[in-house]
Amino acid sequence: MMKTENILDKIVEQRKKDLERLGPSLGFSIPKTRTRPIVQFLNPSGTILEIKRASPSKGDIAPQLDAVKTAKIYANAGTQAISVLTETHFFKGSLQDLMNVSSEISDCSILRKDFLLKEEEIEISYLCGADAVLLIARILDTETLLRLARKAREFGMTPFIEIRENDDLLKLEEAIQDGDVVAGVNSRDLATFHIDPLIPASFRNSLPCKAVFESGIKTIEDATFAKNLGFEGILVGENVAKKPSFTPQLVKAFNDAKPNREGDFWKALALRREIHREKDPHRPLVKICGITNIEDAVQAAELGADLLGFVFSDSPRQASGDLIQEVRKILNSMELYPLLVGVITNPHSSEGIQAITKAEYGILDAIQFHDCHIPSLLDTSYGHYGAVRVSHSSHLDGVKKYLSQGEPRVLIDARVPNVLGGTGVSIPEHIVKETKEFTPLWLAGGISCENVKEIISNFEPELIDISSALELKPGKKSIEKMNLFFKELHHES
Image 1: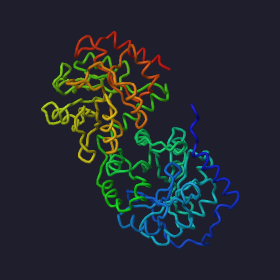
Image 2: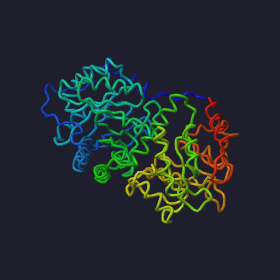
Image 3: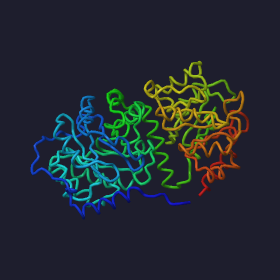
Image 4: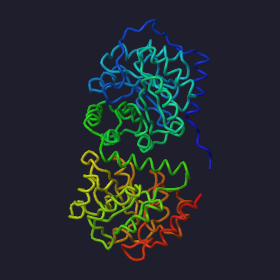
């Protein structure tokens, strides 16, 4: 396989050449003194909207963008801060944009977003009117990061420290020891420019400071999801630069949203994924579905299930309403904490309503809307995701639809006429591969002890969902099969 080009390395290498050739002013005429008062960054919390003409991944985004006119649109929409990209080669920004915007905008905090490497660039940022500077932990060693953050504070600016990996978090924690910072977690990998909203989710509870969800915000649902996770800010570039008229809706959606159980579910799941990856990068999340009794729930949890699925639908695997509370009580007493998921096929049925009510009260951690309409993130406060039954490429339109509406993940299951789940039938291989091309793979259907190694090796799913293959009979798991399944799973490497 051809090695993916590291775009971040290219940008940093170009930056070093520019600094060597032009100095920290990058060839621009810099004011001798600053006249604009400091506006505290992300106080109060809110949106950070970006002046952005291009990117390495998308090319031209808004090549004719007028920085000042766009900044005024953002300010009138009520944004707390404006991010000005000043990198020239890959993003087509400049320090002139920063100077122009800062001279015209007095009510919003202004962030200089760039690939800063030297202390002298911090003073330049201050003189050009910035109230905060982006410091990317991934490209700075700890000593340099701390030195640049201290220099920013000396000028009254806020260090905005971007992280994405565990090593970055360690650097951030050291910087916090020195003084105030705002953290940013980038859902975009700057090496490959791939986006994953579960990266910010996995870090949020570990950040002992105000934090910003960066990149990947395309819709008001995306903005709502970030706030559900507990982020105090979002940084949005492409989708407001291309369509500035969208900004009032985006600002309002973020400001109106709140942290809730939806965010709690995804943070817990994302953290489980990261813990697995540290031990074994090939080990997927595991959901054991069709749980109907305490014995099976306890065994699955003890063996390492990440999620337990309880069916709230007309099925031989239907769970009783009282079972969930009892399972949670017993598992908690054993210090076992799998996420409990209610699986529904009709949100308007008595079973579906019962499950949703339990999710609203936190008795269930999430609802799996199985081959039925998924409610909007704007209308729910509990954890949820969708499952789409597929047997043909056209069925993937449903998966793409839900992803475009802000759903972080969608489960695919085998489509069998008149049977909604627990079929033991596998999804055609080409459909699985096609799904993996546009989203991390959550896979159900036909997974068993006999083929789980092959499935992991061939498709590298992020989550696998297994039910009927572990049963003695519908609704009752086999102790031997469950033990064998997890033995096979852990032997995968």
